[in-house]
Length: 128
Image: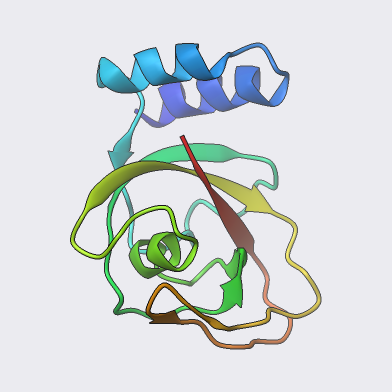
């Protein structure tokens, strides 16, 4: 699955995959894997994108807004970002990004994220 995701990310970054093509890969079960708890093991390659099935929750460690620390839990981050509701599942695109100098927290969609200073890895979430 990881190899398929890396290939899709390669073509996606170059604008060579349409949203329709990505959706077809998702519908056939070729693309999305169950979400890991966080992005620590996958957060070293800035620009890498992954597609994960996430079940929303309001519980879990979370730092940042829109861009989250690599150790932030994916499930509450997806709810905080407004991409899934608690208890519901959705496929989201997770992109590893360069970490900002500071992560700002806030309360959104019933989920509280916290402020944090510099951290070694970061990610953002997007709807499919």
